[in-house]
Length: 201
Image 1 (tube, rainbow, N blue to C red):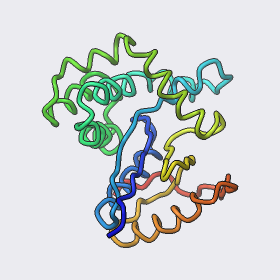
Image 2 (cartoon, helix red, strand yellow):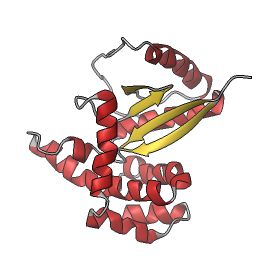
Image 3 (cartoon, rainbow, N blue to C red):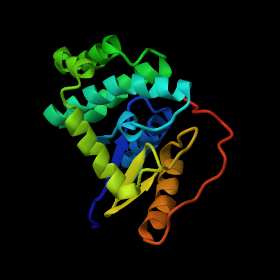
């Protein structure tokens, strides 16, 4: 009997690529002896003070609220974070609802959490904790990458970025290869130009 592997995955709720990776990770947890643990990070924090295009700056400004609410869930009801992320991500990425309080409240209610947690998105009261969470990610992978970030057996990497997310044994096979790559401490980057947008199927 082997020890169970922990897969830590950091996400910003607004990022469609993190959403795709998270759907793969959920499939991995079904077909491999893996415990999946979600954590919140913040693209808004990562990009503070950077010279961004107007369109991406608008995206970053819109990203704060969802990450704040997700962090409130992580802090107060960590056992519900995965379910909340699925409920909120389904609204944001599939239903194309704005990353605003109505979607946050609906996602909280769907998973049986107090809708009052949505207030965190408006106040910024947990921004210090959000910055600390992002600092942990940056310490692990640097500040030149975004979300998702994955950690396995103490080794962290940005990604993997994929579209669409594989399912079933195909997800497991991709995991097997990814773990082998991740295990080598001298490995840093493997990339090709994306030719498709996120495919939400």
